[in-house]
Length: 359
Image (tube, rainbow, N blue to C red; front, side, top):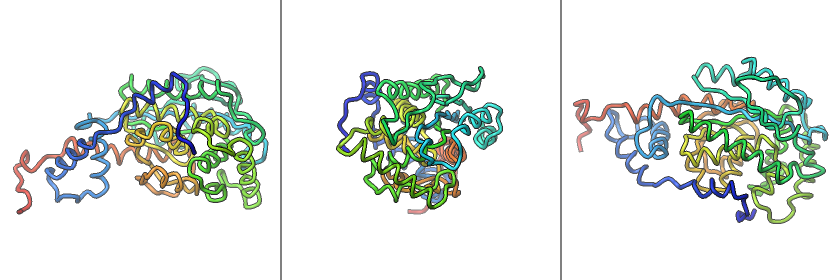
């Protein structure tokens, strides 16, 4: 896919503000880690996570680390093609469940002290006022990507702005560690199409069962994706055009969120398949955004493994999950948080009066 593209002016400002992390910060982190009261490298991957936290923060992370997750919800017109085991009405029903505090993401966020915000970017329903819900509906679901582009240019830009607004909210509230979750019946179809477009992998390789469809339905889902890609993206297309044609409103909002979070130098914990598709789009637009990302977990969706390889990200957890909502990212946050505390608070050999290893 051609990486050159013409982003709208408001997005160009964000893209231009995302800077690669200076590698000298990693060298400083490695030096500090080797001075801590432990054998060098004895904390394994936790030391790499700590070094990334140090580099993103350009020094010792500020602890305790304030954490937040933003869950973007939207419906997908492609559900008209029978690509999901669940009816599209479940999107709105699950948003109500989020607002009542009864979903997995609510439980995980409470356990790990993660501030949770639910954002209606395009659910085909209306919700009452709630302090936990942002009303940012762009339209009542994306269009059927099998028949026409999922979004207009204006709708895509509105969705990206919603994500940038959430990233700005994280900055204003001093949330250093952030995650994006999603809810949208049919969104594994969009994510599979995006993954095929970005990685060049065959549709059959990147498309899984999603909410649990059976073999015949899976083959039908793969055909729908192939035909959509052929119809909309047969030539060289920019990441934004791929997102507009075969993405979803919540995926576009997450892409904007990841770009804004990278601009503000947050510790970005990426969730599973859908969120990683959005992350890959943001990296296609701004390669330096990759420096700020941690892969929270490895989803059971086959396309997720392709995206992790594409982004060269190693997941923190592998619990054979495939729920979405931001659950894998929130579960990984305590591990990354621990790494940040370790490099910030652990004593050095000199400060503790402990003898270091004999040369």
